[in-house]
Length: 316
Image 1 (cartoon, rainbow, N blue to C red):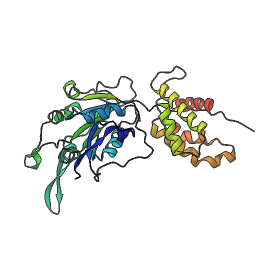
Image 2: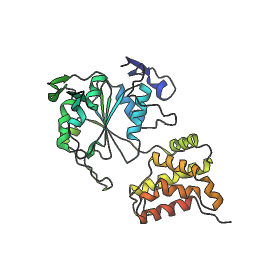
Image 3: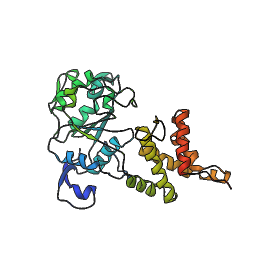
Image 4: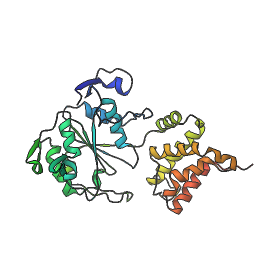
C-alpha cells in the first residue's frame, strides 16, 4: 500500500495552484481507478473535493438522475488522488456479508475472504456503494455504527476487530435522496430509514453543462463537425427535460441521455458514416442503436421527431 501524501487541490483539479492541501496517496494501487483523459471535472466536483478536504468527514451520499455521472465523478477524483476504490452495487437481495466478507474453502481449509467494505476500512480506501437506495433499510441498518466511525467486528472471523484506517471514506450513490422515488421513473427504489440517512452529508449531482459535454464530444470525436456534436448535446438536453417532465412538448419519455449514452451515440455515428452513401442518415441510424431501441414505440417515435427537427432529413 502506498504512503499517504498531500496534493495541492487547485493544481490537481483546475491546473492553478491554490495552496489548499488535500490528502491522497503517493502512488496508485491495483484498486485505484485509471484516469480518463477525456473526463471533465464539472461543477459538482466542488462539493466532493471540499468533502475530501475535511478531516474525518461524515459519509457522503450522492443522488441524481440516471447517468448523471455520480460514480464516475468519484472514480475520477480518486484516480487523481491515487485513492483505492472498493465498490459494491445495491439490490433488494443484498445481505450484510456481501459487504464485509464470508467464509470460503481454500486448499481444503475454511478461510475468511474480506468483502469490499472490510478491504476499504483496512487499506484506507474509498468504499463506493452504488445504488444504495435499492437495498432494504433493515439490511442497511447494520452499517449505522460503521457510518458513525466505530470499528467493525466480524463474528464469522473469530471476532476480528477492524479499526477503520484514518484515510477510509464511505460514499453512497443513488437515484433518490433516500425519501423514495416520487417520479415513478426508478423501479425498486426504497424509502430509507431516517436514522440511517441522518448520518450522511447529501449532495445532488446533475448532468454536466452543455459546454462541458460539447467539449467532451469535440475532444473524443474530432472527425465529427462541431455543429453536429453541439446539436447532439442539444438533443440530449431536450430529451432530459422530457424525461424529467420539465417540458410539455411531448409526454414524458421513459428513457434519457446519460453522458455515457451521448458518447455512445457519437461513436456509432462515426462508425455508421458509410451509410450516408446509401441515403441513410448516420446520426439518426446511430440514435436508434444508442438509445431509441430501448424506448417504447411511442417514446421512440417522439424521440425520432425531436431528432429530425434538429437533424432534418434532406433528399436530393
